[in-house]
Length: 255
Ligand code: MG
Image (tube, rainbow, N blue to C red; front, side, top):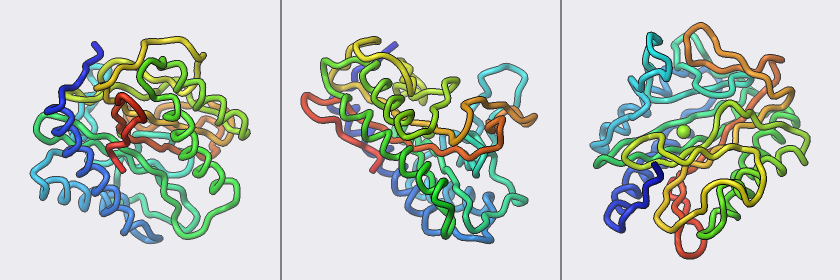
């Protein structure tokens, strides 16, 4: 079900989203060669709890029964890991890595969701371009996130921009509505046709999240049940914000 948030609910969403974006900034400060991804995770968890909020990805149930829930606060996905990488003391950041940090904060019953891809030190031109295009694709998409437009307008703008720049979006995962639930309707694919899908209304809150790969858009899941990697081993990037549809321009709640 697509939920339309009241003025009061939007105020509560904004609090969760603000903590989510602050958590990104806390983690970003620590991105450097030599740090383990579990250390980043601990800092994020501590910060979120210090704001009387809940790290909502931790213990999030796996969509297939029988698989373990997600064990950490952050999804940390390095290089060929597309999404849902699990933090570990054995995974150490290296110069040139691209590292996506995806996190969800729950506060006062509402969620805020955002992801960034950071570069460790200096990287290759190719990886730099991938990170830049992924972020820009989000902004291309939300140009169409206006009352009266349709979901397909956002989706096609993202997909076309990514393809035009020589990269591909993955089709198995998509953005989503967000609010009292981390994942609400509608789904927001990163490809599609303009004019298709549900019509946008003021008060909708959406997590728009291009997931872009350098090479072929084929992915596979590791045995841990979560980590998604590119099949050809080429790098991937991810960028996400929670936005609010208004009477005019969309508001980005997690920046
Ligand atoms: Mg997210």
